[in-house]
Image 1 (cartoon, rainbow, N blue to C red):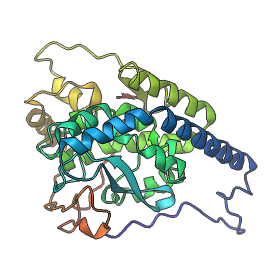
Image 2: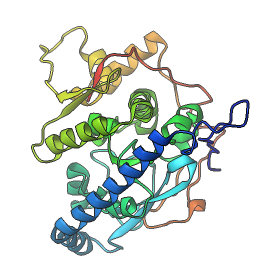
Image 3: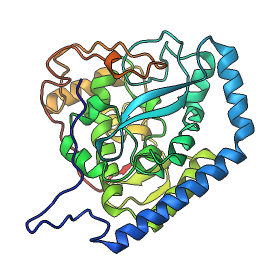
Length: 327
């Protein structure tokens, strides 16, 4: 699949580049300050958690044969290819789709723990140190998903992708809520539009104040294990309070699909939710079979193959009403 061409720079009438740092000293100052912050924090964290990194690396090596690290292909800053570094969490010869479900059979024993705790993301501090990523920013996405929303990603990729951010906090438990029976279509139909909203919100409202707030709520999530909700209109974050509903409530299935990580999964959810979505005409069916031959330890882009004319038959999925809290 060819990499989508994304142009983050626009030149209006008169030839002046609106994204030029020389045309906007405030933006230049913000970028320089953010880069200095990224380097200082990434280096400090790498030194501080080195014993943990060594322990995880040893566990990965002893648990199953294969390399300790692998690089996964993502779309980075201004559409550039990004080979994101992670701890290996799948078996060496694992093949399949780009999404990791909660009960994914490709996961190793230590890989299940890494997925649940997100410890597999720690090596990305090296990507931050090298300037390919930022501590805070939109979550880097797979090229085939970026190709579905090029206009949105033109804005989103105007900033460096990050290890943590609004969408990462709202969907910290993404692997546990995606439908195991139809992960690709469920992700594209239900989860991705919400993440696009949050990532676009960050790209447009980026500021030191917002970054400090994201760091604070990331600590709440990682250190204290509290789930975080994010408002789609304002980006305001808060500790998530689960809505209690009695069994058999008329809105159970619809609420569970719309709430994303706030919903409690059940075995009857996919069937009941799909029926509701079909009645409303909002569910986009996957019309072309998706066959992927993607190995975690393989860095060559030609090993990722998509069969069929496109992923969703060319239909674009709309977004829900603004103002709801996600996560």
